[in-house]
Length: 51
Image (tube, rainbow, N blue to C red; front, side):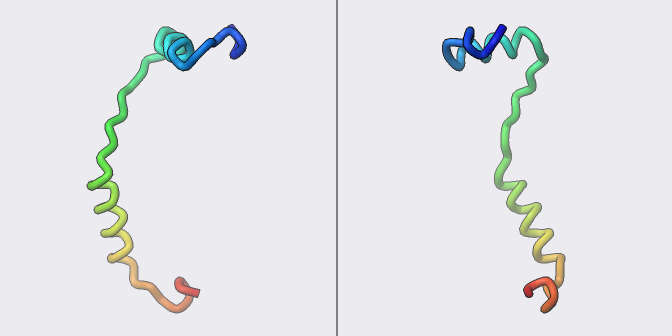
């Protein structure tokens, strides 16, 4: 099958779902943001880092 044979996104999804095991990703932005904020606060900024 080529890209020319796919008429829309649903056709593409059908091909992918029949040829691979899919995993649903559910983002958790609050914990992601908290993780990076903690990283920033734990790193002491110096003149070299800010330059």
